[in-house]
Length: 316
Image (cartoon, rainbow, N blue to C red):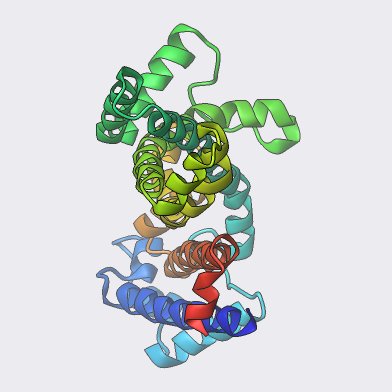
């Protein structure tokens, strides 16, 4: 297990390093002068040059890269060019919205997928299976932003069950804050849950055809006991893979949801930073999102070994 863990951890570090290089290079080649964006098009060349020097953008690219990385290692992310506040403060405030939203969306997606996928697999080729798979296909084809608008019109404008947008802040109470995240979470979870439901069903049906399942059924084990005791664990490998990918998709998908529902999360923060050419904010937010995705997939790899111990033996 230790060799398996070390290999996965080294892969994690290498991926993060590669991501940091790509992010930095992309920000370098993007057009636009941050100093000119901050000062405006009427700024004098002298003022622009002075601000460029103050921001440290006149230094060689390699020096700025290592300054950024060394700051990351000690938790110093620098200051925002546009807002003149620590980037850590901006990100921590945005994470208080984006992370709970992603967790809520993922939880809804997994619950929806397991309930629909397992039920459809247990009633294979019956009317309920065909109906649920048809609904899931519809769910996959619906764009998130369009569904978000429909949810606002129906549940916020007509029924007034939830607010149409905005975030009151966690200091206003747990339920008001969660209530403002319900509709964006549903909008994000619907497509992901529908996709995961189809994968769950396919994986369960594939395991159902294995010899050990037929043996268990021949010994008199009930269909329900076979499903929960033998099939589900063996069917979880592809499901876990998709879950890891989907969590990353949900984090990226919050960009759309946060703008539709006017939530000041990471998505809104990075869009404003891009418009303001606030390079330091964009670099740190994008690397944070990449790190979260890589770390989630790292833990998914560890779960593989827990669910199927044979993977550890093959890796060692």
